[in-house]
Length: 322
Ligand code: MTE
Image 1: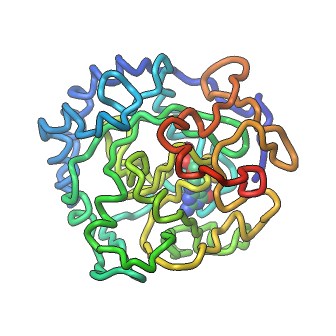
Image 2: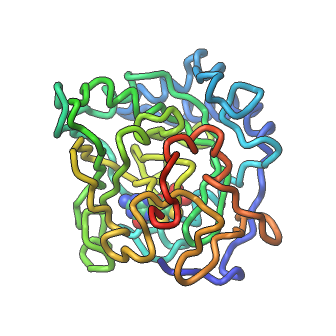
């Protein structure tokens, strides 16, 4: 992936997480007032009191508040989250993605779930958003390029969707695909990557309660540049695993040929768990640049989610299974 020099980064407002949480009602009201479009369900969910107390499993929650919140870390500002993006279907320039994706049409939208399942189904967006209450999940996002953010997502566990289709016992992996439509995603006319963008997880990683499908951030609908209308978020893995604008999910018995690991297998492994002690061949992963902050921070093993996910890899050599 292209690495930007530090001075390419716009400085942005850092919004304190508590401030964000306190002003959710205000944002929700603004969203509700500002739209009458077809994705009424998401808006209805945004207005539902059940969102005030997200349904999270206290056994796996990392924050005392009941949110999956990185303690003592501020959420990255909305402007930075939505103007510094990797989304190669629109542009390889992080600063250009928001402009190029501005008019991306995401309605109607369906997600087809098939493969080794008892009940394959094509879900439309409203079906998906009915599956589970939308939850606030404030997660670190660590890009393999050694920058990071803290993003307040709005989403639901991927496991809720997988339960619906009932995986067969032979299903071991989950493969995800982004929309392929060069009319709507103009950079797909070029060959910077093989299209469509593909990602994959082991089934147990996909079923882990931290793994979500996000349809919003900062209490608003997901903007196109962040992967509208629905994207994966796997917070303990490098950001490229969190595939955007998903249209297809296939359960399979074979490890999927994911885009970046097929493109440069020595640089981007299938697992791509955040690991400060395994360097990328061209740079160290020991530290990271938190967007909106000065200096660098130490990178945390599994991006700080080790107490919840390390057991998934017990007995595995994480240096060769990078
Ligand atoms: N998904 C698709 N379809 N195309 C992409 O180029 N980039 C990935 C990931 N998902 C990408 C993608 C990378 S490298 C990162 S770091 C994150 O999206 C960035 O997500 P963000 O722009 O919401 O911060």
